[in-house]
Image (cartoon, rainbow, N blue to C red; front, side, top):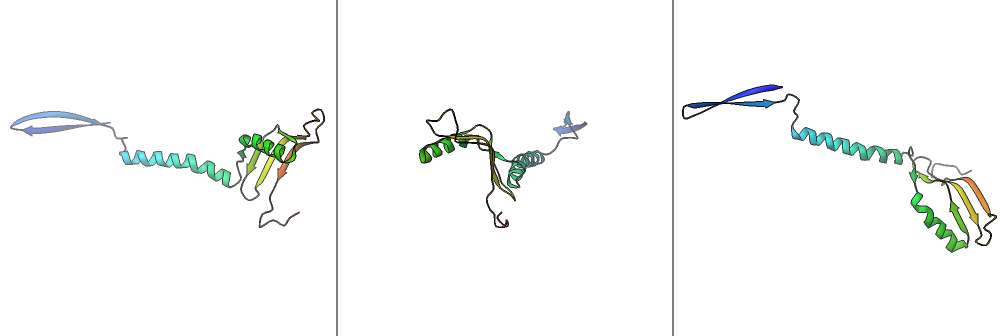
Length: 129
């Protein structure tokens, strides 16, 4: 911490005005730049992780819409008990688990039970099977 003493002379009278300032004070522009950098990192790092396929996106909100679509088109009940996720990047994939497909009248016995389903689209660089 530094103390600066300012002497003001007006009309022959002098006043001593102490001014206290801190060495660690940064200009306001530096603080704004720092906050903008931190904000950019908070946004860019997660988006980059998703884009490179390092972090999948949870599609929990799409489960009811998918079940309703299957019911209206096929007349079957689809239940997704586990997570439903999509992963982007070099090998994009849709991953679901705990899937049950049944006819509405056959509540006791499902038509199909899938423990884990991974759907990978064929990309331009892949060679099929």
